[in-house]
View 1 (cartoon, rainbow, N blue to C red):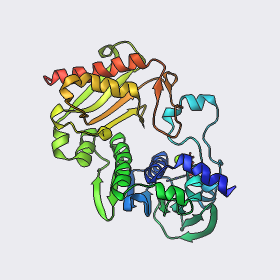
View 2: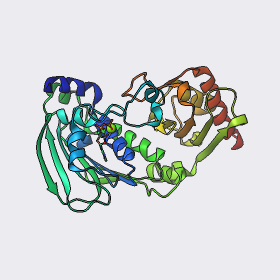
View 3: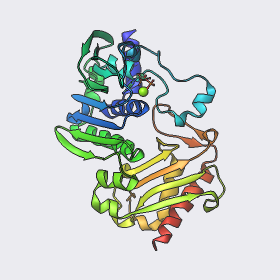
View 4: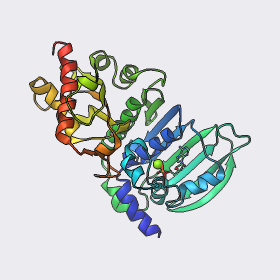
Length: 331
Ligand code: ADP
Ligand code: MG
């Protein structure tokens, strides 16, 4: 059973950034107001995600690492509207814990008494003890893939692994300006959002003043958009002057969930047209609202790629929304 779990883990957790994604989603699912992400050596040595969310009782903790006990999928309907629910397979902690040393400390909100610390190593619960801890949950993953040497060897340099982690945490920070998100790497704070601002404030915290001051608002819905499934397109896109040579800065969200979609990326790029220059990409934080039945989230359930029933219409709608924002700024 442990071997099966380890093989499965390889599919679900490719690298530290995928584990970070699962933990941050759990914190957001738990209604946290703050999420602190700390990683050491690109996340290969340590990943710690601390939140002030709902927290877990001892029984909740034991259930959380058990296989498939917490799946939220109730039926086909849930899958189809799946973009609204972040976690949907109930196996992340279990699988991560089968290829790492996982420590969870948690205390339910407004609970009396101590919290609980659970240690889960290579697929077994090795200790459960009361512990003093604040309300909320702290999950620590040490030495990811320590027992799957082939996987561990597959990891890239610290800089590369950290860039993936940074991209994941950035996406969630931008998608949730009402949550205070902090990212720390090897003891250095990379960014910290206040959780009290709007998207512009989050962009400032994450990307800095030069980029933030050159962002252009996009806000299109109803008659502003050509026919298609999208109900609205809103967010911020960069002035072409600040564009970068990496697509890492394209943060796109469908119904609040950080995803990628070819149609959306092509729509954005189309709106900039030749203004992009060379192989440059804009900074984008763009939110799309669409009825759940017009989007297919199951292209890669664990990856972030989605497709639409009518990709062409979506491409035209995104293109039009971004283009009219650029036009308003004389671009
Ligand atoms: P899923 O999120 O798909 O249910 P996970 O393995 O990621 O599966 O988490 C299992 C369960 O553990 C969650 O459903 C939730 O009940 C609980 N849990 C995990 N992380 C947290 C957290 N940070 N705060 C509160 N509960 C959590
Ligand atoms: Mg989860």
